[in-house]
Image 1 (cartoon, rainbow, N blue to C red):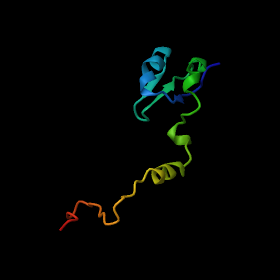
Image 2 (cartoon, rainbow, N blue to C red):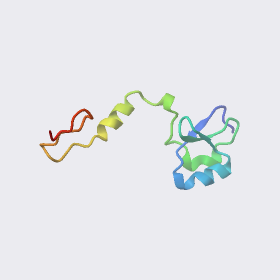
Image 3 (tube, rainbow, N blue to C red):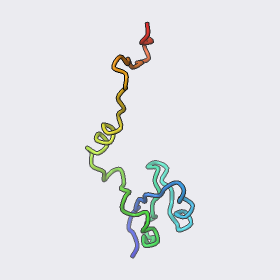
Image 4 (cartoon, rainbow, N blue to C red):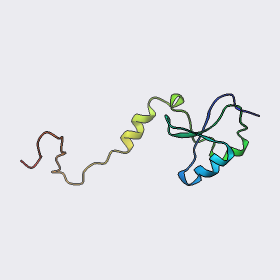
Length: 89
């Protein structure tokens, strides 16, 4: 079985050399490893499944991810610096 288009992979940085040795290529625009068209995906099984091309991702997903990663200050008197004036003046 061979792929007809790019199949993106979820390759940890520590395993990039192993993926490259199997024939995976780096997509600099999407910052992901992929299986080139016409290449058998079977050897890449350990990295398949968790990665999706950005175009196929749910449009609500980035917002949910951003909302989950917002850190609130522990100090109730905290004033964020907006770049115009220092908050202590």
